[in-house]
Length: 396
Image 1: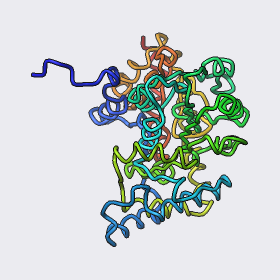
Image 2 (image 1 turned 90 degrees about the vertical axis):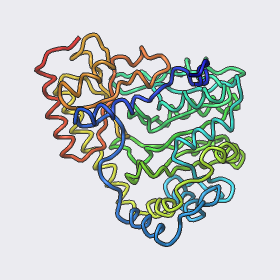
Image 3 (image 1 turned 60 degrees about the horizontal axis):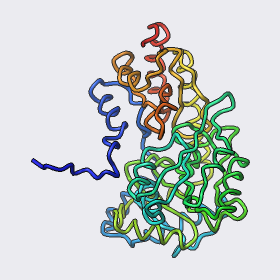
Image 4 (image 1 turned 120 degrees about the horizontal axis):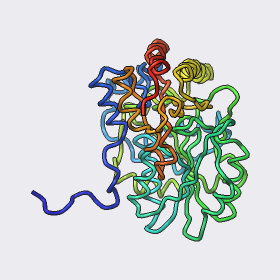
């Protein structure tokens, strides 16, 4: 038996992700899993067929380190088509093992011990872990829910920046809140980045899952930001292929090179036959992207109405797979973790407690996230099951 603890102190306290715990709970109880954000339908047949064709035609060995040229070209075409941004496919586009690896590569490649990173909380759970691995320090800025959605305090943001601040990590459209940062909010961040010479790394994996009334604006399109922004996205959410793990990073050659330097010692390369398939997806007509967002918006509406009818207080999602609720009308003690652990037995539905997305868990203790990225009939069944909360009395 080892006499010493094998886990590095940098990762102490992270443990198993909440997604693994809740997904295992869904399997054990037979509950509908609205916790982890993955769809329950396959992606477009053109994309799936392209992967099969690639496998059968021998695209099964290591692809080039930066990614197959066909995908890098498709990524550059996508950025030009949707956002009027131009990238050199040789030096400014990098294919990665999902957006998670792109983020890890960027942070490992750009941060030194003692550097500070501005992050907006709640945040996707890999952010804090990756920052910890670099020896840098996360400086969280709170996104607070209100009647007009989630917002941050610009004065708090400005006060958080100091001489050790090197990077801003921004996720928009935002997981878990469903927030889309407005042009005005982005300008506040951009002005600060330019004034204090900061790098901005953006996680934009939900870029095509934006609902009526909201608009996604990539940070790199703002004046003065192209030269200091690394834009990260992936094909998993857009093409219902989360298991393929095909992501990418675009930006100035120096930022891409920093991410690539670290990335080559992580997976090295990945997913050769899936890369040409995602290239096909990125070239699909506009109608595909419109239909994708419209379908998800419909299930969001169904789920949101059901959550409200169950006695919970939903905060309207502007994008993404997720809707966050305040559970206190149903559970006055506001214990989101216990609420989620009990929910499968109470009504056969799994959700995720939002406190795991916060550096300060108390900020999200009373908040719980539900995913709407399932078939309409599955969401309808989940809503029917959740209705028992309205008549079961508060649990505390």
